[in-house]
Image 1 (cartoon, rainbow, N blue to C red):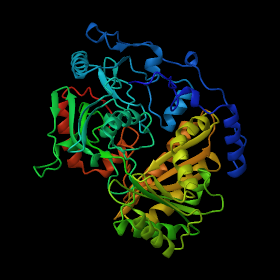
Image 2 (cartoon, rainbow, N blue to C red; image 1 turned 180 degrees about the horizontal axis):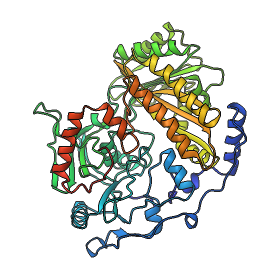
Image 3 (cartoon, helix red, strand yellow; image 1 turned 90 degrees about the vertical axis):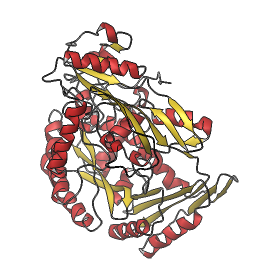
Image 4 (cartoon, rainbow, N blue to C red; image 1 turned 45 degrees about the vertical axis):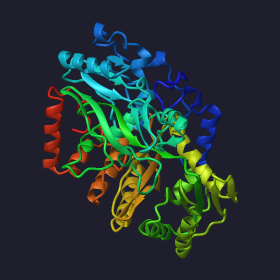
Length: 537
């Protein structure tokens, strides 16, 4: 089911969706006009012929010849993830850390053969899914190894089994969000896990990085859906028992959820699925005061109303997504159910928001698709625009990088009592770092997920970079953000994983004895240390 449409070798997504010159001129005018940026360049996109990629250090062995290659484009397009520093290096043609071989196993036996060969030859193995990591999760220079093998799982893209009675499905690691959706549709079921990378990221990648998805409350991570996981490690295959729950010791799934390929390669897993929700209700609340909006959000989640969507956008985020230009802060609310109408839950959430000064000028929308009914459709404007902007944002980032703009995101989670101090410190330290490095900068915030005990704020930063010095400027700003998170008791990542970018701060966050236990697990499952070296540990 692999899509034959050509993806960019350096940027996010499909080549035919890169912002064209007209799009980039429009972005340039917006940044120079709305944000006061200095005049920005509009540089040519790179071509495959322009890039610096070394010849492979390895030849494809006979035992992998049926599913491996050293093709130049295949190696280039699997060198980096899609974080800012990845896009910058790709845009400027630096592919010096490209893998030597790209293997695309067709089944678990191919995976076993690849790992056995890599173990014997001291070759580093980097598991690869959609290539959407923003934390250096798939980048390996191969120092100390004979070379690097990229193990691209995209050929293993099937929903293998569906248990409609238990509402679960066994899904191969290489299946993308749209592929899973299409195959489950035959059973009138859905996974309903929608990370921003949904179009390209894979089930195995979601599990390996503990990806966050569609639901803002309750079912926030892929963890909440996983029943069991199967993986191939250098020490052999392992599979956890498929169960709805168990109290038998520490959860064995947890050693694979978030393991980031450091222990082995996830090949498939059983996952909870559900029917399409027939009942939906949504509305967008507008606030003049940000902290009133924060309090409204806290009260809604602590009332245990469990909205599927509960995204608080500050005024900068609302402006960035072209939803409001009057300084309003927006709370996007959405409820859904497979069983019963949810309009009352929305009404209660709206009442809480109104108690804190929120208004709903666009009205609410309530749908009952089982009966084909819809009350009002005015709320489509903000909610629909937000959804479209959410999935389109990575494409815009490609264009911004080509204009010398430093654009990145970071996310975290912290308790409600700590959030005000954290938020104010980030505004001071990150904006201050952008001003010192770039002369000016823009920082916006949205809540991607909310819990009874705290929010998961997600920040977007934009600054005019000096072409050729972008990565040094980025490192300084990233360091300021990460240090501030640590100083205020927040997590270094809520759903972007650890990779190599967050590794040092993750080691600061996690107890040392716990890290020792993870190292012991790696020695057991990967005694020669060939699996994604440098990621996580």
